Length: 326
Image (cartoon, rainbow, N blue to C red; front, side, top):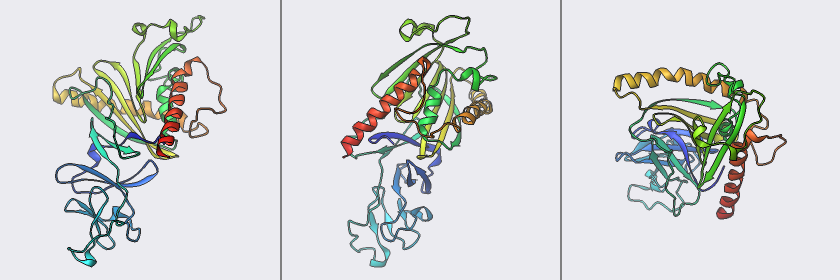
């Protein structure tokens, strides 16, 4: 994982008030809850007393209570009550579990994975605001999250993986693509055409205005397909651990204004989006190794430029964050 980053880890709807949501994310066994003021908290799940799983406990007075001996922890992970020494007993500072800063944005729960000082603002997906409505689905892939991200930055697989859905038209020749990176954000302009024997244009020969659609990826783990100003597909590629990823997929639209009709349209679109996702999954889970690296035993070509840039930036971020953390 890349250290010192805001990761999308959950859909906001998964965290209920005064109820425990227990998941594994980024290789950590975590527990989330929403307090009476609607603030979400996140701590690791092992009690500092004798290692019981706090996920088997409950929320009491906005604190998580251990199921074994009733020890309570606040949102910072600090032990605030040990029943056996009395409600006025002094709780030692070593009764503490690891906590993580969390923020809600765009209907997602972001978790800061890194040093808890001078936290940067969360970058959000360009153009998506409250004027859109969306439907969503989730799926688990048995791959490292980097593989699922690379799949959505791959501009040359559509005619083959999605031959009967979004890849219709036989546009197998890839002009460019244009790839730009700045401040943790990769943008990709796509210009795929039918192969009539011509040579593919180099990235500098392609004009953005001639491209159909744009992909945008924000490090470390979320992406959108900008189909047009009123239609988007969004995905968060959330690491469960080094071998498994949960994908949160959303279909956004705002071209329909009547609430009942627009909600119906976004919902009925999801089986089609699920089919597309399954087409990707069928192939990606066969890739070896399941985790991508900057240099592997692969032969890449011009159309792989978005993946090459992603790997380079990811490696740089991993290196710099490791140096900071050490």
